[in-house]
Amino acid sequence: MLFRSDHTLTVRKTTVTLRLGEGVFGARGIDPATTYLLDRAEVADDAAVLDLGCGAGPIGIVLAAESRRRRVVMSDVSKAAVDLATANAARNGITRVKVMLSDGTDGLDRDRFDVILSNLPAHRGHVEDPSLAARLIAGCARHLVPSGAAWFVVNRARAIEIVAARAFRVVDVVDQNGRYKVVRCAAPRGAKASRS
Image (cartoon, rainbow, N blue to C red; front, side):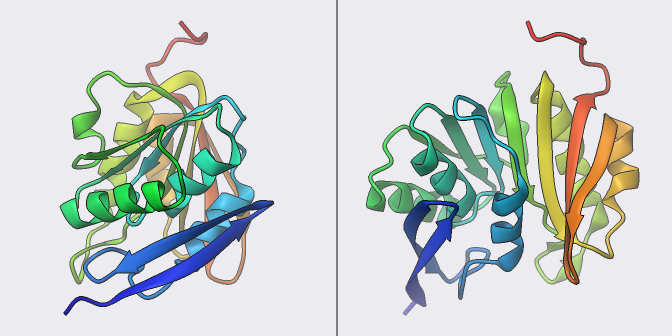
């Protein structure tokens, strides 16, 4: 029998209930880095948003519940995560999100977003894999509108700023605490200066 549990998440004035489950990132509780990212990221009420590596869907579901004007896409490489995020969106009465199976940004076609958020993975299974975050960051640069921003949360010891600077002209550590840091990336390299 798979472990499943319900958790309540409140960010600003928005509260959602999420079912978490075995085989999906954060199975035993909402990851504190995810909450840290949600507290610090700036997302306009009418933004087109990508929750990359959505897991059970806390980021995308909170942002969709917070503003009904947002277009929210949630993606994950895990079918179990996609199924759980889809069920969590329905559980919270969120019907206007799109949840899709995608290996990083590979399944996004030509979609472009104003804001991309990700609690970047550091491991593939139980093996540390820094190339995974680098690939995801590069993919985000290709799927961000020129005026948009990608927000990442990582363990503060991970130097993703160096990797991010290859894909973005602006890379700022917005905030950090004893465990995590939130990094905002803007001005994707190769993008035109104005939004088309």
